[in-house]
Structure formats: structure tokens, C-alpha cells
Image (cartoon, rainbow, N blue to C red; front, side, top):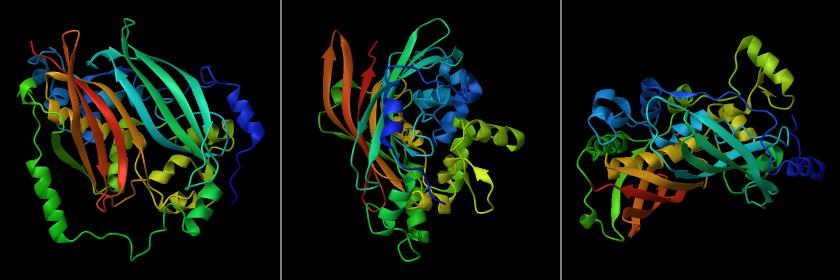
Length: 375
């Protein structure tokens, strides 16, 4: 089948919505962050931090309550996590988020959000030729009106056929073959398992300000090798606006023409299946089924929380997704301190963060700011 093209008319129609809230808003996966939601989201990240998983532990910390991983906010607003509008049947690839966190996300928080389309920029890409960067701004507040966080999140809208044709001609990605797909040896898997056994979480061991040096690296954590099981695990706790079953699915596809594409049995399925359907992922130009952008941003938040411990908070996390992280990829999440600074009596550490695949290719890169509490 042939997919839609980006037309000037459709682009202008979408451009007219800049500064406005989306015309449709799908229900979020979570409206309230309860203890189970916090634990499930942490576990979907591969994070067993008791601050996120154990109410009794949280009560003994400076916060006096169990917290949730900061990127759980993706599950409270579908616009921030990729449910954008306009350009029907044009593929949307999640490409990054710039989070500013004003408050910790406490268990018991009821989240309300407000989003609007911030900008559209046409960017030529090696991957798909004509590409549109579509950016939304979202503000998150709790049930008392307290401002929790802000996020600029963006997707790239690409023509599926163009992306696939470029891949077939040797564009940004090569279509994997039996010879190029990495098969892990027992020795490699043993090394990965050893690394996981030795990953350490700082927890209640307070990070000492005087021990921090500009240019120092922070401990590396691994994510992967990525599997379909991992994708299912993330979907169970993150949710997706397009995942519907039976009557609800057919009614939803009828209400949103162009959303679903037929599978090999000619049955409509949503585009989110690129995360587990290898054939469909390659049909839209990806090298294969790949993970979720918000999932990878959450991995870098996990990298930071393992390092900074209970007596600190991520204040800013700005992450660009640089390539597809396909089934079988292993990521090394890393960070380096760029500077530490004291402003108005508050202690901040700025970091460069990134993740590379098993072949050294850059999968993620970004910047972060962590605030340390010394009282």
C-alpha cells in the first residue's frame, strides 16, 4: 500500500493551530499517581529504587512520602508523549523532550495538564527527505494548582514511503540482514549480567558537594539488549492512546481515518505497532521494530537518580533522540559533570548525558541539571 505525502495544504492547516490547544485530547493513562503507578513505572524502566517502589522507605526520606520517577509525567499527558494532530497518515517519530521539573512527583498527586502547539519547522533529513519538526509545550499541575513541571516535546513527521525507499537505497539506515543482526554470545551475555549485578544505587548515601569535580564521569548503567518483551513491559505501564481492542478499536479507527494501516491479514492496526512489528517498522523506513522515545528519556533519568540519590532532584532533562534503538540493541547510558554552581544559596550540578549502542553509535544525547540538598 502507498502512504500519504506531506502536502503544503495540510501543512498550512496545521500551522494555523500554532499557539492553540489540540482540538482533540485523548484520556491520559494516569490521572492520579498512586503507589502502584509509581512502582510499575519504575519497574518498566528497570529501576528498583525503593524511593519509587516502597511507601515505607519513602516515608523515612527527606520527602516523607513515596515519590514517582519524574518521567512518569509522560503517562499523564498524551500530547507530551506523542499523540499529536495534523498531517493525517504521516508517520510521527518521537524525537525528544526538554523537561523542567519544579517539584518532586509525590504519590497521591492528581495531575492536570495544558498543552499547545508551539512551533513547526521543516527540516531536511537523510532519513526521509522532507520532515516536519512538530513541537508542543505542556504544563503539569497538581490538584492544588501547584506547578509541577513544564515540557517541550517534539516529533518528526516523515513520509513513510520516502523513508522506506531511502533505506532501501542505502540512506541513514541499512536494512538489517542475517549477517548484520548482532547475535549475542554467551560470553557477552555473561558480561552484561555482571555489569547489571554491579550497578549501584546511591540511595540514602548523600552525595557530597565537595566530592564533585567538573569533568568527572558518573557510573554507567546498561539498558538492554532490547526485546519485544521490554516493549510490552513499557506499554503496560505507559499506555498508548491508540491501543484499543475489538469494538473500541474499530470505532476508534472509524473516527480517525488514516490512523490505522492494514496488517498482513488486511486488519487495521495502529502505527504504534512499529515497536513490535518488524515488517511494519521496515515499511515506514525504520531498520526494524524499535523502542519508545519516552522510554529512552526515562532511562537517562534513571541514570541520574542512581547517581544523585535520595537527597537531590532532577531539575532539567533535555534529551534528543538521535537514532532508532531497535530490537537487540544494548545501550550504555553515561554522564559527565560539566560544572557545579551555587545560585541563591542552592546547589546545582550540570551534566552532559548520552547513550551509545553496542557498536558505539550515538542513540541519545542531552543535558541535565540536578539540585543537591545539604540540610
